[in-house]
Length: 195
Image (cartoon, rainbow, N blue to C red):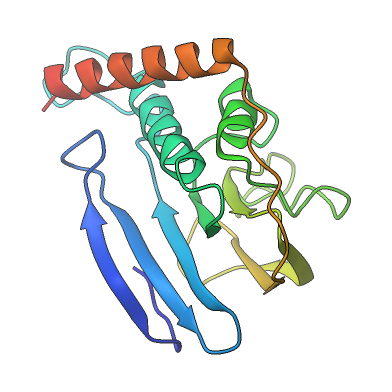
């Protein structure tokens, strides 16, 4: 779900890779700034049983969704973005690092802490799999986490300020781009086989 006190425009639900995993796309019109693009993700976690009991999903569907969004962001390098959600992937993984290089977005946790979000019930075993990435013209005024009732995740909170300034462009190499396309194709194949 996406709740907002600020009016949303052009909001839509998209199924990028799997027909069972929606993503939220919306634009937020800010009077003092302009338009902000928002993407909310919750790609398929690896390890879930496949519907036909033929095994478990690997990470290909998740990787494909993250790479598709990274490419969408990279295609509009002068736009302002927030991409957030349960990535089902830690911030230091190869896939999440590649998402950052391709999209050009920054991780506002850097220099602030890990903000481990899962599993909320096991303090000795927690990982930062819920992510917030912002455009290079954004800065964090405040960041935290809280435990919503009934969830096995902590939620991330962030107060973000965006400035009118030139954007830093993505730093992905041509090898990153080739690998992203391979990840997208593999994820689509996996999603198609296990509808």
